[in-house]
Image: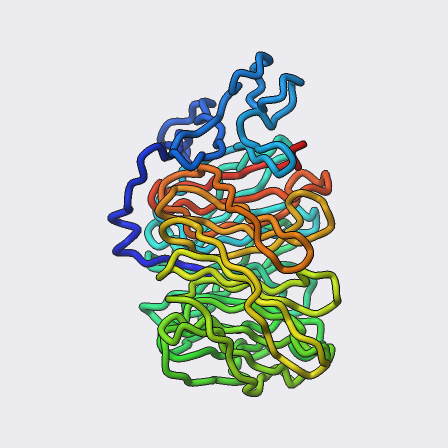
Length: 424
């Protein structure tokens, strides 16, 4: 993913019953530094009402079960619950986000590409589940995606951002103390808008697959002389996002590229030398925005989940048998609500099966879609986050073995850190 359709974001569609979470914290210390937090997010019912707070549980903890735990009102029995740990003003419009452990102390850090407000920003996640006021690398407005990657092989995570209007990839090398050194840039034509770091040639360094909005993708490698281009694939279409995985089971990462204009996912075989060869495509719904790869059925093959912005749906595609093949069968589709963007996979209910998570911009919510181990998608369960969410990440921020979320709210100009737990 990642990124946003900015006419839509700057004029978000309201939904009755969806009250945005309003950030109250200043990033630079010059504004409100109150400890006040907005209400925890809750499940949004089909009628547009939400449950949150103590939800009648009588114990005041907000999780609906009366036991003093954190899941009241943010869950449906037998599924999953989410609650807000922290929401923080981003100081501008955040778009793509990433999170990783950086520096020699492995400090969990969240980074955001800023469409407005200081280029690239990052925040440390505290042991209490809050976001420390962050630092920024001020490259100006207009960034659409950000990623952590080790591009120079020194074992430290570097910070990379892309700027489609200026055709720039920006690298800030990681430092042992957890910060980042002086930046350098590389030019990538035709609107770089998303980055996928992956080691494509088994050299211990991440290459960068850069999605070019109006021209396919490029592959960058970093060496002594800086960035070099390993491959440029020029294609007709409007390209939005990408994901990598071993789709043909040959031990080499392959590429799934979102072609929004062509209503398809284009597939490319990894060669093993840092480049890709053509492999075909999968027809999907109207205006795809996100793709995620993972084994939904437990058979060892990589399946695919796609979100489509034009018809507001999520669809699963199960990989068919055969090594060396890239053949997919449409298996299940569910309506999401207005404006889904990226999609991520994680086992949210801890049943051993990957589930799907997507930001739904028009609802001001993230949608959790549980799966059943056959590729079938369950009912969308929306949790309110804030105005116009456009990206979501899944990480275990508190090291409890349970997935947590961080959400980029472009309309609310905030980041939301959310804890989760299976509901029972």
